[in-house]
Length: 265
Image (tube, rainbow, N blue to C red; front, side, top):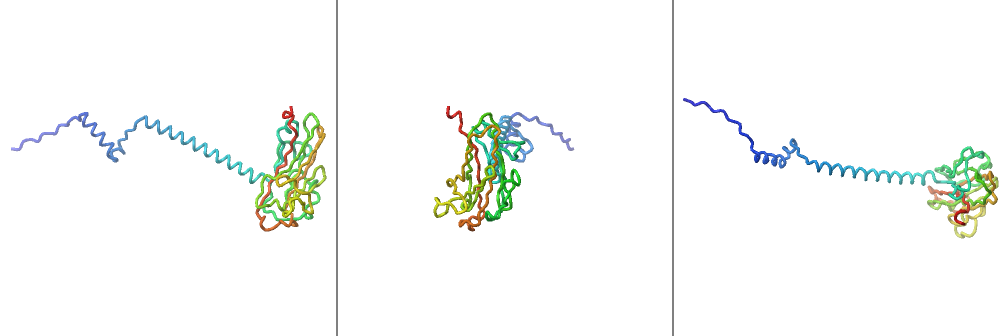
């Protein structure tokens, strides 16, 4: 006779066996994938590291953006800048593109002219100082008309200095700058290449390598207005107008200033 087969009885898992099973889950990747055991302290540390990295990345992006904006300001919008220094602003010197000063500012900017070629003075329009206010560039020249006003409470003396702020490929060697002040034109150019002390035959020599010209207005009374037009071109008759200056550029700034009264006290 055959005896009946006894049913297997389920055995309880002891704590020691459960511990071994957990160790095995950690050691075997396949088991660990389905049985994750993560320490809460590690989660906190990971979150902190992630937050710090995010902050660092954000700061880096912000710095790069600021540098990009500064670069754009210099390379795209800085061919001709007109500005008033702080003491002059305090004394009431203001600028405007219109003679009635409907809008006024301490800084103006003329747009650049791209892909210029050399021209000569005789080719320029004869009404550059009267045709239009603000920017009125031509195909191969910069032209900008603006106004300076004493909007303060007392008469003053001011100086205006036109300076070169950037040059590439020696473009300034053949550049000409014509400045109208209250209708009177003056043409400036760099000294001859072989004799810096000698001016070109068609213009007045730059004050120095970085300063084109200076002008002074004395006893500039309240509500007095001076009108300026600045014209810049590459003079084809200049001996230094050669192929080497192709794709060059020249950038300028005209700064209006007065003596700082606080500094003299």
